[in-house]
Image 1 (cartoon, rainbow, N blue to C red):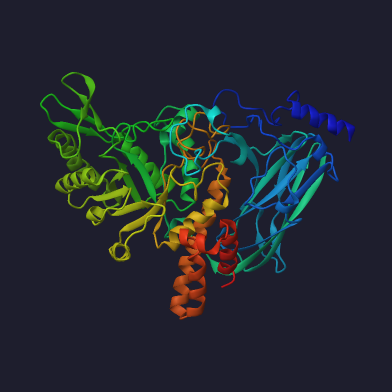
Image 2: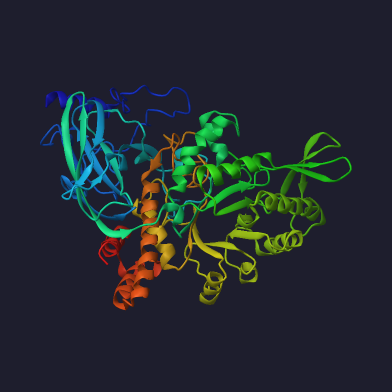
Length: 600
């Protein structure tokens, strides 16, 4: 015990083990893809006297997925469940559990293994459908000082209360554990769609060079209902992809084979979440370079000496073909944008041999002269490639008058072009928009929503830095990510938009803070094909949305009005009004809903 107290004291003073050591070699350089050293947590935490009260030097227990366990605190008993994780699932569903290992002493070469899950009848959920990954810690900050959101510039990180939080779900399988620290383990089970209903049992085993194997039991009750494959989900998920961030972080040439190889697992992870939309850019810096890696135009525009225009679609075609045919995200191609934040548009001028810019606003003759020839040729190209019906000209958060001028020009170029907008609702233009995403707390008029649905148009809700709740910042309670998709269903939206999937910060594995917006707003997955607690919880919510849709269809077909009413009443809680009326926390709502979804 005396040795443990000395180690803990040294740890707290910073003279030893100031950050987690690693069993595998730590990646060198600025952009690690393998193991790495986390930033040091300087926040107050449990001292040696607290850690010394542990009954055993090393403990292992199941926790819950609503808690971000602190790295240097002894886990609170109230957050722990037992030695058995009990869960219910549909066939084809992914479920998450979280175990916690905590230790007074340093542990070397810690690993986690999983077993098959077996039923009494001999059916198996193979171990290959079960993953157990270490949860890593990333630096985060806080909401704005008024607590009302996370928008606005943050040039000095020291002005914001910062700490490390559990979020990264790592791919490194062997780790050392420093003394007086906790190590969460994220467990995911993807139940096969062909699994027989019944109770399945298995174990996870944690072991190490100086740690005798410790086991925790898993029990999954597979119910007699089946989720479709993710690509068949009806929920319209739109997380904007940033291929430029991948090239920078992985240090590979843009649009090279190495670039596409680096993007493939990351984008397939998005596909498996039910993503419907490919994000493409048709101009330089459509969002004025707001992210660490600005978006460039995927289509080169050249003004010839005679004043005519030519367009090179090589990059656009590579990207879209990759996403549609290699990755498998193929429902919609959103092409940004005709109305950027800075109204300046690039092209190569043959007469001068230089890249020049047109500065013009929608409605100006110069604006029309730039965009009309392009839109006509773009329509031709999309039709030749067989992509026209899936493609859309897309804008975000633009004024109504600018939108009206752009819509008029698009219709002149090709009346059949689809148009999308993420922004405030305007009755004057909603009828022109195939896909319209409006902010959280905004609502479509009931008649408009019904008309859009009947016409096969897409109506979704989005969150960004504006919302203090619900959100997916790295400091947001994890339940909020799962709450959001159910909120979309409760509001009778078709799905959810989040402005970015992977616009990584400069050092995203260690530090999610950014010079603009609250931490984590820029991305929800990590380099090296690492998921996050936020992303896995978001998928849970999307699966809940699919379950609700399926059960509603079943109950209507069966005339089970009482079951339908019970389901609808529970789903209605997932609204601002439901929150205020029920006074329930998001995690409480989710527990209630899932109990219902797995028993009806």
